[in-house]
Amino acid sequence: MRSSRRRAAPERPIPSPNIWHWPEVYERENEAQDADGALWAALRELAPWAGADVLDVGCGDGFHLPRFAAEAASVTGVEPYAPLVERARRRVGDDATVLLAGAADLPLPDASVDLVHARTAYFFGPGCEPGLAEARRVLRPGGTIAIVDLDATVAPYGDWMRADIPHYDPAAVERFFAREGFALRRVIARWTFPDRETFESVLRIEFTPRVAARAVAETTGASLDVGYRVHVQRVGGIRLP
Image (cartoon, rainbow, N blue to C red; front, side):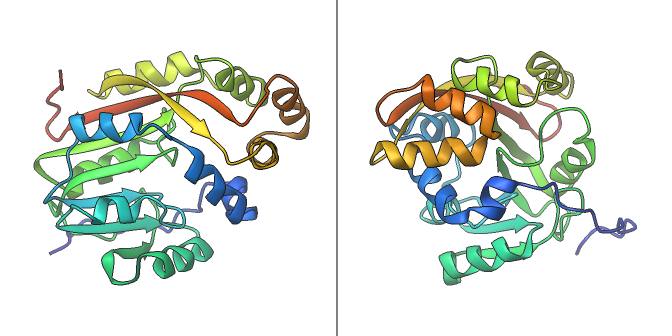
């Protein structure tokens, strides 16, 4: 049964212009990211999903759902933007369930999943407390929250991020997650594109024209090392090693 708590008013989705406006280019970006599997290896160590009931919050068009579904007992994706929900459902078929909802009001029962995963979605530091509360509500005892975000302290991608959003303070975000009881694992993931044209098209959907032009000028070839942070917490506040 779902908790009897009063349901919150529907939240407005946090806009994601990259995937909302250019889903096909974003698909090429997803395909290029983590070419060496470093992020997946860290997740497998810190938050294994084999045989687990998995929830992917902010799943977009479902790119990561099949990877979980190959080993998990069940997979549910939650996404607040209806066109992406439809794309995700077409992608996964019967292998996963995709629901239209936001992170701060998950349409799942209390204590119903073992892993809550979110990748570069919603959980950007202070202000995401409602989503954290919901993640903890739907987790079973011993379950895990795994939040993957970009590490803006790692050049060159982090430099471009900070130039694009100068109000963003990566140190403040790290302090926030530490106060919330999360362990931190830093990971360097290799982005590898099939050609330079695809690489540049991705830079142009990720940054404003000025910063994208800078990123294009500061890179050569069709690959890039990008820093990530993996924030992990077991339900109940148990810190991981």
